Length: 203
Image 1 (spheres, rainbow, N blue to C red):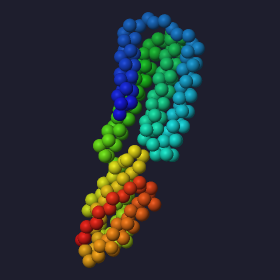
Image 2: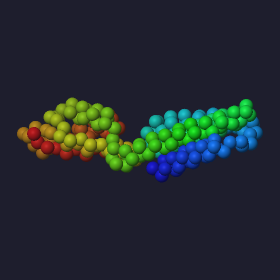
Image 3: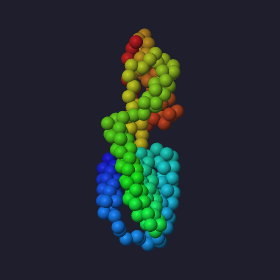
Image 4: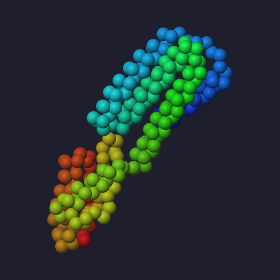
């Protein structure tokens, strides 16, 4: 959450500097070597981004995924810097300001995406598609007549499911408990859910 605010502040600062530079005009052209360094930096950060994104998907880490988005922002900054330098060498100094504005907007968008995702998770938001999937899975468990309520939340990288199932009112306590245990095993073993809280109601 804090990282997204910092990234957004950086994006806004880039935009302010770009507009100020455009209005001021007439700045000295940097060495073209810096442009090549910018290209190399962009390539390096792109591969870091790909690696972190792949790792985040493999270990299901939201933090690493956020880091990968930060990496791609760094790559965009490097590309923008390189374009601006090459543009100044070609007597197109306005290109630097234009790319800076584009890069600033991209950074702000990335920061916004990270903020939205973090806010969703901190408010116990959960993937609605998974809720529908888990609801269908639980409904198909033997002995489950229906689902009264189901909620999901993320505990770090782990999923926690709370569900109220409806069972036949003629079942005794042990039979109802066995159904609840079966639901827990199916969700944890077949779908990798970290913890399942099953509440049983007769129907």
